[in-house]
Length: 141
Figure (cartoon, rainbow, N blue to C red):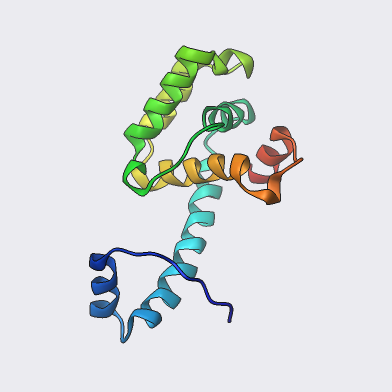
């Protein structure tokens, strides 16, 4: 199995040791589980949004740097509001701003985080370099 080296806090390290036989055993369980949960959550929540709304979400994360402490629905909503106010991204994608914001307000922090990771990945991952936003959204929806 391929290995991954991750930096974790002392508290996270202690948590893994407390709940699993070893820190490595915990990491080997948690990482695949988190990835599976991400994709499951992304698929279910993406179905709630139209293609134009997903493109608006994508555009709002063009220059975003996602940090764990910002992985919350409120932060996601703020990012969308700022992108709409400053760049009018909702009009570029023919999206109802009020409808989009209402849908975002109904998300849990986990659902919002999945969408933020998805949107940020488009702009930062080499995998999606050269793939159109339209195609990326359609692959998800």
